[in-house]
Length: 357
Image 1: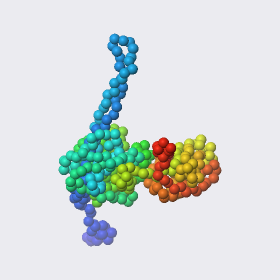
Image 2 (image 1 turned 60 degrees about the vertical axis):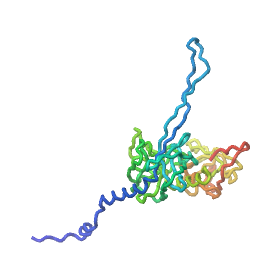
Image 3 (image 1 turned 60 degrees about the horizontal axis):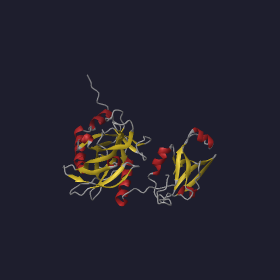
Protein backbone atom coordinates (compact mmCIF):
# COMPACT_ATOMS: atom_id res chain seq x y z
CA UNK A 1 0.00 0.00 0.00
CA UNK A 2 1.31 3.46 -0.93
CA UNK A 3 0.73 6.64 1.06
CA UNK A 4 0.57 10.02 -0.64
CA UNK A 5 2.72 12.78 0.85
CA UNK A 6 0.84 15.59 2.57
CA UNK A 7 -0.31 18.48 0.39
CA UNK A 8 2.12 21.43 0.44
CA UNK A 9 -0.53 23.85 1.72
CA UNK A 10 -1.33 21.61 4.68
CA UNK A 11 2.35 21.12 5.41
CA UNK A 12 2.91 24.91 5.49
CA UNK A 13 -0.09 25.47 7.75
CA UNK A 14 1.05 22.88 10.25
CA UNK A 15 4.51 24.48 10.36
CA UNK A 16 3.06 27.81 11.58
CA UNK A 17 2.94 27.78 15.39
CA UNK A 18 -0.41 28.68 16.91
CA UNK A 19 -0.38 31.52 19.45
CA UNK A 20 -0.19 30.16 22.98
CA UNK A 21 -2.90 31.16 25.43
CA UNK A 22 -0.20 31.47 28.08
CA UNK A 23 1.49 34.19 26.00
CA UNK A 24 -1.77 36.17 25.87
CA UNK A 25 -2.29 35.67 29.59
CA UNK A 26 1.24 36.84 30.33
CA UNK A 27 0.62 39.98 28.26
CA UNK A 28 -2.52 40.76 30.26
CA UNK A 29 -0.63 40.34 33.54
CA UNK A 30 2.13 42.65 32.30
CA UNK A 31 -0.40 45.37 31.40
CA UNK A 32 -2.19 45.05 34.74
CA UNK A 33 1.12 45.38 36.61
CA UNK A 34 1.93 48.49 34.57
CA UNK A 35 -1.45 50.22 34.81
CA UNK A 36 -2.82 49.40 38.27
CA UNK A 37 -0.50 51.69 40.30
CA UNK A 38 -1.89 54.72 38.42
CA UNK A 39 -5.56 53.86 39.02
CA UNK A 40 -7.32 55.37 42.04
CA UNK A 41 -10.66 54.93 43.78
CA UNK A 42 -12.66 58.13 44.41
CA UNK A 43 -15.03 58.70 47.32
CA UNK A 44 -17.02 61.87 47.94
CA UNK A 45 -20.29 63.10 49.42
CA UNK A 46 -23.01 64.64 47.28
CA UNK A 47 -25.28 66.98 49.23
CA UNK A 48 -28.79 67.46 47.85
CA UNK A 49 -31.87 69.16 49.25
CA UNK A 50 -34.54 66.73 50.35
CA UNK A 51 -38.29 66.91 49.81
CA UNK A 52 -40.38 69.53 51.59
CA UNK A 53 -43.32 68.76 53.85
CA UNK A 54 -45.97 71.28 54.91
CA UNK A 55 -46.23 71.58 58.68
CA UNK A 56 -49.71 70.87 60.01
CA UNK A 57 -50.76 72.06 63.48
CA UNK A 58 -52.47 69.10 65.21
CA UNK A 59 -54.67 71.59 67.12
CA UNK A 60 -55.81 73.43 64.01
CA UNK A 61 -57.34 72.50 60.70
CA UNK A 62 -55.15 75.09 59.00
CA UNK A 63 -51.91 74.07 57.30
CA UNK A 64 -49.13 76.43 58.28
CA UNK A 65 -46.76 77.83 55.64
CA UNK A 66 -43.53 76.68 57.33
CA UNK A 67 -41.72 73.78 55.66
CA UNK A 68 -38.98 71.43 56.72
CA UNK A 69 -36.16 70.63 54.27
CA UNK A 70 -34.28 67.44 54.93
CA UNK A 71 -30.73 67.52 53.58
CA UNK A 72 -29.57 64.28 52.02
CA UNK A 73 -25.92 63.22 51.90
CA UNK A 74 -25.37 60.66 49.17
CA UNK A 75 -22.04 58.83 48.75
CA UNK A 76 -20.48 59.24 45.31
CA UNK A 77 -18.09 56.49 44.25
CA UNK A 78 -15.97 56.24 41.14
CA UNK A 79 -12.50 55.75 39.73
CA UNK A 80 -9.76 57.87 38.25
CA UNK A 81 -6.40 57.61 36.54
CA UNK A 82 -3.19 59.59 36.86
CA UNK A 83 -2.19 60.82 33.41
CA UNK A 84 -0.03 63.83 34.17
CA UNK A 85 2.71 65.00 36.45
CA UNK A 86 2.07 66.94 39.68
CA UNK A 87 -0.62 64.55 40.90
CA UNK A 88 -3.27 65.27 38.25
CA UNK A 89 -6.03 62.65 38.01
CA UNK A 90 -8.64 62.35 35.27
CA UNK A 91 -12.14 61.11 36.07
CA UNK A 92 -15.78 61.65 35.03
CA UNK A 93 -17.68 64.86 35.63
CA UNK A 94 -20.63 62.91 37.00
CA UNK A 95 -18.42 61.32 39.67
CA UNK A 96 -17.46 64.67 41.24
CA UNK A 97 -20.30 67.00 40.25
CA UNK A 98 -21.83 68.77 43.25
CA UNK A 99 -19.80 66.81 45.80
CA UNK A 100 -17.89 67.66 48.95
CA UNK A 101 -14.86 66.17 50.68
CA UNK A 102 -13.30 64.34 47.72
CA UNK A 103 -10.82 61.65 48.73
CA UNK A 104 -8.84 59.22 46.61
CA UNK A 105 -7.44 55.85 47.60
CA UNK A 106 -4.29 54.84 45.78
CA UNK A 107 -3.36 51.33 44.72
CA UNK A 108 -1.02 51.05 47.71
CA UNK A 109 -3.93 51.92 50.08
CA UNK A 110 -2.79 55.46 50.81
CA UNK A 111 -5.70 57.90 51.16
CA UNK A 112 -5.37 61.56 50.22
CA UNK A 113 -7.73 64.55 49.89
CA UNK A 114 -8.22 65.77 46.34
CA UNK A 115 -8.77 69.23 44.90
CA UNK A 116 -11.18 69.69 41.99
CA UNK A 117 -9.15 71.52 39.35
CA UNK A 118 -11.98 71.79 36.84
CA UNK A 119 -14.87 69.94 35.26
CA UNK A 120 -16.57 69.78 31.87
CA UNK A 121 -20.15 68.52 31.73
CA UNK A 122 -20.31 68.44 27.92
CA UNK A 123 -17.66 65.70 27.70
CA UNK A 124 -18.37 64.26 31.19
CA UNK A 125 -14.75 64.72 32.25
CA UNK A 126 -13.10 66.30 35.29
CA UNK A 127 -9.59 66.74 36.68
CA UNK A 128 -8.54 66.33 40.31
CA UNK A 129 -5.19 66.97 41.94
CA UNK A 130 -3.61 65.24 44.93
CA UNK A 131 -0.38 65.92 46.78
CA UNK A 132 1.31 62.56 47.23
CA UNK A 133 4.69 61.00 46.55
CA UNK A 134 5.34 58.29 44.00
CA UNK A 135 2.11 58.46 42.00
CA UNK A 136 2.93 56.97 38.59
CA UNK A 137 1.24 58.39 35.51
CA UNK A 138 0.16 56.55 32.37
CA UNK A 139 0.81 57.47 28.76
CA UNK A 140 -1.88 58.39 26.24
CA UNK A 141 -2.79 56.04 23.42
CA UNK A 142 -4.40 56.96 20.10
CA UNK A 143 -8.13 56.20 20.21
CA UNK A 144 -8.44 57.11 16.52
CA UNK A 145 -6.30 54.08 15.69
CA UNK A 146 -8.53 51.60 17.54
CA UNK A 147 -10.11 48.88 15.46
CA UNK A 148 -13.07 46.63 16.29
CA UNK A 149 -11.76 43.34 17.63
CA UNK A 150 -8.73 44.89 19.37
CA UNK A 151 -8.15 43.73 22.95
CA UNK A 152 -8.73 46.33 25.70
CA UNK A 153 -8.73 46.24 29.51
CA UNK A 154 -11.03 48.28 31.77
CA UNK A 155 -9.72 49.30 35.20
CA UNK A 156 -11.53 50.73 38.22
CA UNK A 157 -13.44 50.04 41.41
CA UNK A 158 -16.77 48.41 40.49
CA UNK A 159 -19.01 48.12 43.56
CA UNK A 160 -16.04 49.45 45.61
CA UNK A 161 -13.87 46.48 44.62
CA UNK A 162 -10.64 48.44 44.23
CA UNK A 163 -7.98 47.21 41.85
CA UNK A 164 -10.42 45.41 39.56
CA UNK A 165 -9.75 44.79 35.89
CA UNK A 166 -11.87 43.27 33.12
CA UNK A 167 -10.94 42.47 29.56
CA UNK A 168 -12.72 42.45 26.25
CA UNK A 169 -12.51 43.84 22.75
CA UNK A 170 -13.39 47.06 21.02
CA UNK A 171 -16.95 46.38 19.86
CA UNK A 172 -17.30 49.62 17.93
CA UNK A 173 -16.28 53.28 17.78
CA UNK A 174 -18.03 56.59 17.21
CA UNK A 175 -21.18 55.65 19.15
CA UNK A 176 -23.52 58.63 19.57
CA UNK A 177 -27.21 59.55 19.85
CA UNK A 178 -27.35 57.84 23.25
CA UNK A 179 -28.50 60.81 25.33
CA UNK A 180 -25.67 60.41 27.85
CA UNK A 181 -23.62 63.57 27.22
CA UNK A 182 -23.62 66.61 24.95
CA UNK A 183 -20.48 65.34 23.29
CA UNK A 184 -20.87 61.69 22.29
CA UNK A 185 -18.23 59.82 20.34
CA UNK A 186 -17.96 56.74 22.54
CA UNK A 187 -15.82 53.64 22.24
CA UNK A 188 -18.03 50.58 22.72
CA UNK A 189 -16.48 47.59 24.47
CA UNK A 190 -17.65 44.29 25.92
CA UNK A 191 -15.14 44.60 28.77
CA UNK A 192 -17.32 44.55 31.88
CA UNK A 193 -18.06 48.08 33.15
CA UNK A 194 -20.15 48.38 36.32
CA UNK A 195 -21.07 51.11 38.84
CA UNK A 196 -17.79 52.38 40.30
CA UNK A 197 -15.82 51.86 37.07
CA UNK A 198 -16.70 55.39 35.93
CA UNK A 199 -13.57 57.48 35.43
CA UNK A 200 -11.18 54.54 35.28
CA UNK A 201 -8.98 53.97 32.23
CA UNK A 202 -9.62 51.77 29.22
CA UNK A 203 -6.18 50.59 28.09
CA UNK A 204 -4.69 48.80 25.12
CA UNK A 205 -2.18 45.97 25.41
CA UNK A 206 0.67 48.49 25.54
CA UNK A 207 -0.73 49.88 28.78
CA UNK A 208 -1.71 53.17 27.15
CA UNK A 209 -4.92 55.04 27.99
CA UNK A 210 -7.19 54.85 24.94
CA UNK A 211 -10.41 55.78 26.77
CA UNK A 212 -12.04 56.80 30.04
CA UNK A 213 -14.81 54.47 31.22
CA UNK A 214 -18.04 56.46 31.34
CA UNK A 215 -21.21 54.37 31.21
CA UNK A 216 -22.88 51.09 30.42
CA UNK A 217 -26.08 50.32 28.59
CA UNK A 218 -28.17 47.96 30.69
CA UNK A 219 -31.82 47.16 31.34
CA UNK A 220 -31.04 45.54 34.67
CA UNK A 221 -28.34 47.77 36.13
CA UNK A 222 -25.71 45.08 35.65
CA UNK A 223 -23.11 44.71 32.94
CA UNK A 224 -24.56 43.33 29.72
CA UNK A 225 -21.52 43.60 27.52
CA UNK A 226 -22.14 47.13 26.26
CA UNK A 227 -19.69 49.46 27.98
CA UNK A 228 -18.91 52.97 26.77
CA UNK A 229 -15.67 54.91 27.10
CA UNK A 230 -14.72 58.48 26.18
CA UNK A 231 -12.00 58.32 23.49
CA UNK A 232 -8.51 59.39 24.54
CA UNK A 233 -8.23 62.01 21.80
CA UNK A 234 -11.10 63.96 23.36
CA UNK A 235 -10.06 63.19 26.95
CA UNK A 236 -6.51 64.35 26.32
CA UNK A 237 -7.68 67.69 24.89
CA UNK A 238 -10.10 68.33 27.77
CA UNK A 239 -7.47 67.33 30.34
CA UNK A 240 -4.95 69.76 28.84
CA UNK A 241 -7.43 72.66 28.80
CA UNK A 242 -8.50 72.12 32.41
CA UNK A 243 -4.93 71.81 33.69
CA UNK A 244 -3.88 74.99 31.86
CA UNK A 245 -6.95 77.18 32.46
CA UNK A 246 -9.20 75.36 34.92
CA UNK A 247 -11.92 75.11 32.28
CA UNK A 248 -12.58 74.13 28.67
CA UNK A 249 -12.84 77.03 26.23
CA UNK A 250 -14.94 75.71 23.39
CA UNK A 251 -15.35 77.32 20.02
CA UNK A 252 -18.53 79.42 19.76
CA UNK A 253 -20.52 80.10 16.57
CA UNK A 254 -23.25 82.32 18.00
CA UNK A 255 -26.25 80.35 16.78
CA UNK A 256 -28.86 77.91 18.05
CA UNK A 257 -30.42 75.09 16.12
CA UNK A 258 -33.36 72.72 16.14
CA UNK A 259 -34.14 69.38 14.45
CA UNK A 260 -35.41 69.36 10.89
CA UNK A 261 -38.95 67.96 10.81
CA UNK A 262 -40.82 66.97 7.64
CA UNK A 263 -42.93 70.12 8.04
CA UNK A 264 -39.85 72.36 8.30
CA UNK A 265 -38.19 70.58 5.37
CA UNK A 266 -41.25 71.31 3.22
CA UNK A 267 -41.29 74.94 4.40
CA UNK A 268 -37.72 75.59 3.22
CA UNK A 269 -38.08 73.37 0.10
CA UNK A 270 -35.52 70.84 1.33
CA UNK A 271 -35.69 67.67 -0.83
CA UNK A 272 -35.36 65.35 2.18
CA UNK A 273 -35.37 65.63 5.96
CA UNK A 274 -31.72 66.08 6.97
CA UNK A 275 -29.31 68.43 8.72
CA UNK A 276 -30.18 70.98 11.42
CA UNK A 277 -32.27 74.13 11.09
CA UNK A 278 -30.89 77.48 12.22
CA UNK A 279 -33.42 78.82 14.71
CA UNK A 280 -31.59 82.09 15.26
CA UNK A 281 -28.30 83.64 16.20
CA UNK A 282 -26.32 86.78 16.95
CA UNK A 283 -25.83 89.14 13.99
CA UNK A 284 -22.50 90.20 15.50
CA UNK A 285 -21.46 86.59 16.21
CA UNK A 286 -19.20 84.45 14.01
CA UNK A 287 -22.07 82.79 12.11
CA UNK A 288 -24.00 86.05 11.68
CA UNK A 289 -20.98 87.85 10.22
CA UNK A 290 -20.39 84.89 7.88
CA UNK A 291 -23.88 85.32 6.43
CA UNK A 292 -25.78 82.47 8.08
CA UNK A 293 -29.46 83.33 8.52
CA UNK A 294 -32.49 82.01 10.37
CA UNK A 295 -34.20 79.11 8.54
CA UNK A 296 -30.92 78.06 6.89
CA UNK A 297 -30.33 74.31 7.08
CA UNK A 298 -26.77 73.12 7.77
CA UNK A 299 -26.18 70.01 5.65
CA UNK A 300 -22.41 69.55 6.01
CA UNK A 301 -19.61 70.73 8.29
CA UNK A 302 -16.14 70.65 6.70
CA UNK A 303 -17.40 68.10 4.18
CA UNK A 304 -18.96 65.76 6.75
CA UNK A 305 -22.74 65.21 6.53
CA UNK A 306 -24.87 66.53 9.38
CA UNK A 307 -27.57 64.00 10.22
CA UNK A 308 -29.25 65.40 13.34
CA UNK A 309 -28.93 67.92 16.17
CA UNK A 310 -27.06 65.70 18.64
CA UNK A 311 -24.51 64.63 16.06
CA UNK A 312 -24.05 68.28 15.05
CA UNK A 313 -23.34 69.28 18.66
CA UNK A 314 -20.75 66.50 18.87
CA UNK A 315 -19.11 67.74 15.66
CA UNK A 316 -18.70 71.21 17.16
CA UNK A 317 -16.76 70.08 20.25
CA UNK A 318 -13.32 69.63 18.60
CA UNK A 319 -13.52 72.89 16.61
CA UNK A 320 -10.58 75.21 17.24
CA UNK A 321 -11.04 78.86 18.13
CA UNK A 322 -9.78 80.99 15.24
CA UNK A 323 -9.64 78.13 12.70
CA UNK A 324 -12.18 78.62 9.83
CA UNK A 325 -14.65 75.84 9.05
CA UNK A 326 -16.77 75.36 5.93
CA UNK A 327 -20.55 75.05 6.12
CA UNK A 328 -22.71 73.62 3.36
CA UNK A 329 -26.03 75.40 3.85
CA UNK A 330 -29.47 75.03 2.23
CA UNK A 331 -31.43 78.28 1.88
CA UNK A 332 -34.91 78.19 0.39
CA UNK A 333 -34.15 76.02 -2.61
CA UNK A 334 -30.49 76.75 -3.20
CA UNK A 335 -27.19 75.44 -1.89
CA UNK A 336 -24.56 77.73 -0.39
CA UNK A 337 -21.00 77.36 0.92
CA UNK A 338 -20.14 79.65 3.82
CA UNK A 339 -16.99 79.88 5.94
CA UNK A 340 -17.29 80.58 9.66
CA UNK A 341 -14.41 81.33 12.02
CA UNK A 342 -15.27 80.16 15.57
CA UNK A 343 -14.49 82.48 18.47
CA UNK A 344 -14.44 82.33 22.25
CA UNK A 345 -17.92 82.67 23.73
CA UNK A 346 -18.93 86.32 23.96
CA UNK A 347 -20.54 87.98 26.98
CA UNK A 348 -23.62 90.20 27.09
CA UNK A 349 -23.91 93.70 28.57
CA UNK A 350 -24.35 92.19 32.06
CA UNK A 351 -21.20 90.11 31.68
CA UNK A 352 -23.12 86.85 31.30
CA UNK A 353 -22.03 84.26 28.71
CA UNK A 354 -23.82 84.57 25.40
CA UNK A 355 -26.33 81.85 24.53
CA UNK A 356 -26.22 79.31 21.77
CA UNK A 357 -23.63 77.02 20.23
